[in-house]
Length: 46
Image 1 (cartoon, rainbow, N blue to C red):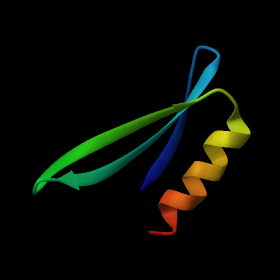
Image 2: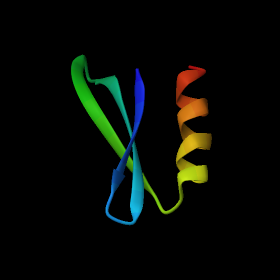
Image 3: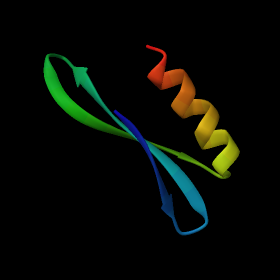
Image 4: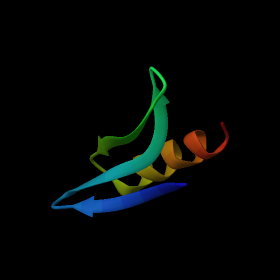
């Protein structure tokens, strides 16, 4: 599941991943909603 969260003037893409066998939540910040939407599509295609 991938979500976009507006934080102030930026947008964050939030998704779950496994790092070294541990479940983690990953946050990636982008300046525009369009950039965040492109990244969301990439992450969802995994």
